[in-house]
Amino acid sequence: MKAAVMRATDAPLTLEEVRIDRPGPGEVLVRTVASGICHSDLHVIEGNLPVPPPCILGHEPAGIVEEVGEGVADFAPGDHVIGCLTSWCGVCRFCTEGRPYLCPSQFAGRPEGAAARLTAADGSTILQFANLSSFAEQMLCPERSLVKIRDDMPLDRAALIGCGVTTGLGAALNTVHIPAGASVVIIGCGGVGLSAVQGARITGAGRIIAVDAQPWKFDVARKLGATDCIDPADGDPVAAVHELTGGGADFVFECIGLVPTVQQAAAMTGRGGTTVLVGVVPVSELVAISAADLTLQEKKISGSYMGSNRFRFDMPKYVDFYLDGRLFLDEMISSRIKLDEVNEAFDRMRKGEAARQVIVFD
Ligand SMILES: NC(=O)c1ccc[n+]([C@@H]2O[C@H](COP(=O)([O-])OP(=O)(O)OC[C@H]3O[C@@H](n4cnc5c(N)ncnc54)[C@H](O)[C@@H]3O)[C@@H](O)[C@H]2O)c1
Ligand SMILES: [Zn+2]
Ligand SMILES: [Zn+2]
Image 1 (cartoon, helix red, strand yellow):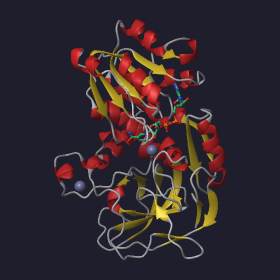
Image 2 (image 1 turned 30 degrees about the vertical axis):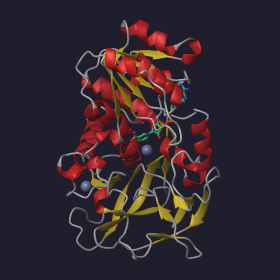
Image 3 (image 1 turned 90 degrees about the vertical axis):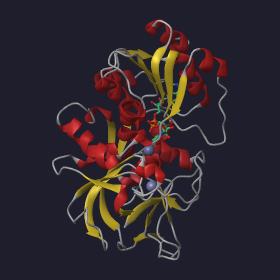
Image 4 (image 1 turned 180 degrees about the horizontal axis):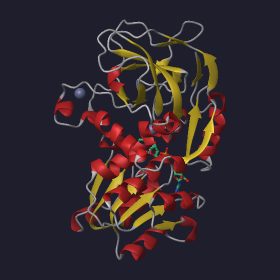
C-alpha cells in the first residue's frame, strides 16, 4: 500500500510502498477513506512532539473495515469506522473511573516480539503513530482505537471527528461545564478552535469571541457560532476581550499552543473564570503566568486532552449532531486533497492558509 512516511524531522514526508501486516488478535484492518490533517502531525514533523522517524503520521481518519483478527466481536468487514488515538484498556484506574482518554496503555502497540504492523520495502520497521498512521491507504488498528458509525455519514466529514472535532467540541462539552449565557473566548480558529466555537454554541454560551491572526477565518467562525471576532493586528486582544466581556471571560480556550497566546488566555480570563489549554505548547517550553491572579481572583487553569473523550460514546453522538444539523463540518473543510499533496498541505497549515484539510483516498 501507498503511505507518506516521515523519514526525518523537519523534512518533507516521502511517498513509499509500505507492507502492512494481517490483523492479529484484537486487531482490525481498515481501508482508509479520508484523513484530516491536524497541527499535532506538524508538531511531530517540526520536532515539537518527540516521535522518532521513520514513522507514518496521520491520526484523524475514517474508513471501512476490510478484515478482523481473532476475537474481534465489535466490527465486521464493511463497517464504517472512525479512528481515535485514545485507545483504552478497560481495566486500569482511569478507564474504570470513566476517563478512558487518560489510559496510560493507549500506545502499548503489539506485544513484545510480535511482527511489526508496518514494514518498509527494505524490510525495516516503520513506527505506527498513535495506533493509527492514517497517511496511508490502510490502517491496522487495535479494535479499541475504532468506533463504528452510521453508514449514511459521509466519511470525508466523519474523519474530522477523529481528532479536531472531538478535541475542540469535547473541550467545551466534557472538560468544563459552560452554563447557558456564559462568555467564551476561543484563541485560534483551526480545526480544533472552530470545533470549540461550535461546542460553545451547542452549550448555549452567550458571547462567543474568536481570536485569530488570519482574519479570513472570521467568516467561517461566525457561521459556526462566533458572535465577535478579534484580529490581534488591530490592537491588544486581551484589552479587547476585557472590553467586550466587562472584565474578562468566563471561559477561555487556547487552541494554538504558543507561549504568548497561553499567557493571553490566562489574562483574558475573568474573576472566577477558567482557562482551558487545548493547544500543545512545544514540550521544551515553559509558560510564566501570574500565580497571584489565580489565587486572588480564583481563576482556574485546566488542560484538555482529546476533548476528555469517551469516543465510543461521543463520536456516534457527534455524527448525529452533524446529520441533524447541529454540528457544521462542511464549512470547516478548506480543501480536499490527494495523499501525494500532503507536504503542500503542511505548507498551507504553517502559513495559516487552511481551516481543515482532508486527504481523500481513491
Ligand atoms: N489537546 C489535545 O488533545 C489536542 C488535540 C489535537 C490538537 N491539539 C493541538 O491544538 C492546536 C491547534 O491545532 P489545529 O489543528 O487546529 O491547528 P491549526 O494550525 O489548523 O490552527 C491554528 C490557528 O491558530 C492561528 N494562529 C497562529 N498563531 C496565532 C497567533 N499568534 N495569534 C492568533 N492566532 C494565531 C492560525 O491562524 C490558525 O487559524 C495544536 O497545538 C495542536 O497540536 C491538541
Ligand atoms: Zn490531532
Ligand atoms: Zn486503561
